[in-house]
Every structure is written in structure tokens, then in C-alpha cells.
Image (cartoon, rainbow, N blue to C red; front, side, top):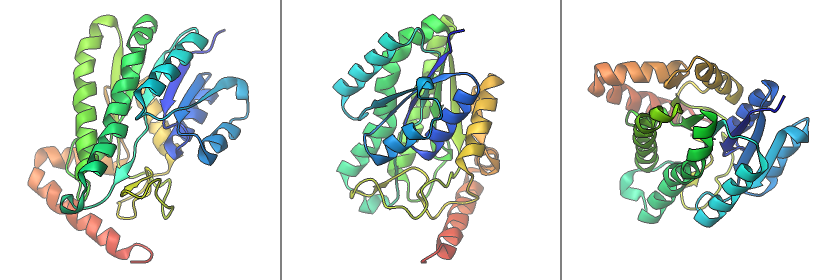
Length: 268
């Protein structure tokens, strides 16, 4: 029987790898997109059966490269049944210290990278009656200190996919948004650039970190249950509840807890 195909952007990262493994174990073929390099190759090498993985080196800020890559996937696979928009960077600084160029880079990767990929898989997902799965964040529905650019990109992502859900329902296409809290996949590792952006999961000021395997399990379980929103982890559930019941209390607790964690972090 032909395996269903899942496409994962940011497939070489910690959560991307965990999602890839879980989906392959569940009988899927997985196509991953990520920047070329040692991490990309390591993610490819980690898959036991290379016939179950398609590896596509792609810079999501290059629209022509994105179009060509998505076209290759459409041409090579009999269907595209699930697209997971997982690629992203974080950025930690006060807005007063944030260069405009860095803000734009975060938006290009986290938001426009997802939008461009989605545009190329609209028709394939309609044909398969498949699913768009956006990996957002607690910062996508609530404020997060020192994350103005990151929170803006995730709020934009949630607005886009939430609205897309309404448009694609008539085509029997599902749109799901998953919101993890802190997933500690790159703690104490150097950033991908020198402009203040960092790998996902590299922040040292987070609260109650999860591992990528647990996050992937929660996300895919929520997907099987056909949830439209998946709150990933205890902190995400608490943040959702408190931010809706009392935004001012949420803001106070968030700033206090993250400041406390940052003060006690190694090297602080």
C-alpha cells in the first residue's frame, strides 16, 4: 500500500526530527526541508530506512528555491497528505535593542516561509483532503518577554492559519495549530547567525522545558483526534487558561517566572 506523505519544514531541528521519526514509525513517507549543512545531513543519516525519507535542502527565505522544492515533492510523490510548518528561529532581546533587519528576518523565516510553502501545497492537500499543521508557540496567543519579533511572527502565523481553516473547510482540508511552550533542543548551543536570531529551543530563560519526543507525541495524538488547536505541555495549557481569564495576571507571572529562570540559569 502506498504510504501517505508528510512534508516537514525545519525537519533537521529537534522537533522536526522527532516528528519525522514518529510519522515514519506510523507508516508515513516524510519529506523534510531545511538548510543544507551538517545538521541536515545528520537528520538524514538518523533515519533507518532511507527509502522512507525525502531530503530537500531549501532556504525558506528564497521564494524561487521554495517553489522549485515544493514542485519536486509534488512531482515525486503520489499525494501530499500533511504539511507541517515547523521551521523557525527565535530571537531574544528588548525591542529597544532590536534592529529592523533582524525583525524582518524573523518574519521572513517564521511567517512568510510558512505562507510560501502553504501556497504550493494548497491544491495537493485539497486533492488528498489532507491537513495543514502549523507549529506555533505560546508566544502565538500570549505575550512573551524579550520576544517582540518572535511573538509577532507567531501571532501572524496563527492569524493566517486560523483564517485559512475557514477558507479550506469547503475543500475538506483540515488546518490545525499546535502551540508548544519551551522545548529544550539546543540549550547552550551557538546561534545560527550573528544577528540575534537563534535556533529553536536554544533559549536559556524558559520555563518547564519539554523534550522533543514528548512534544511530537502530543502533537500527533492531537492530530489523530482531529483537534484544531493542540496545547503542547503543561505550561502551554496553563498559559492558555490564565491569559484568557486574566491577561494582567498572565503577564505578571510570565515576566516573574522567566526572570527567575534566567537568574538561576547556568552561567548567570
